[in-house]
Image 1 (cartoon, helix red, strand yellow):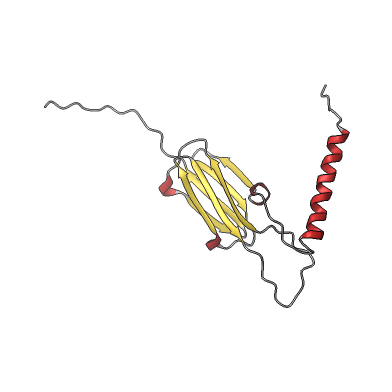
Image 2 (cartoon, helix red, strand yellow; image 1 turned 45 degrees about the horizontal axis):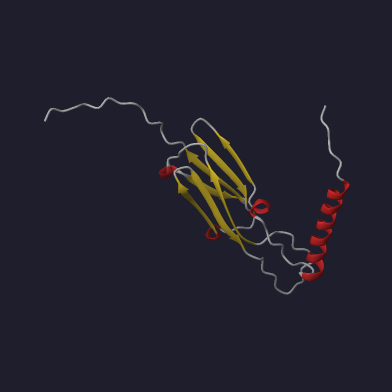
Length: 148
């Protein structure tokens, strides 16, 4: 049997924090101000592995290619970095602006090493897909000894 602990003060404090954040957005930032983001809110990732490689997929609507950077930090760490700029609005007034803006960066440690020369990335319909082919496993080989 699973036992759940009821903590009314904790739940009440969470509700107060959410209310405070909402009031701050409305009263301090003003109506329609873009939200700042945390990397977890902004760069949501699907990741999976097949027999030949690792795959990462991220939803990045409205992001231009020049605002995106992907690189291998080391043999098994992929980093994705970018910036979503505030959309231009000419001759109008924002009623709602909920899409987060700002810079983001996330690193992902892969379960194995990859062949960095064959990594492929594509951005199609706002979805970034990165294919990371696995590096070949080192195989034992006999080393011939030559007489001097």
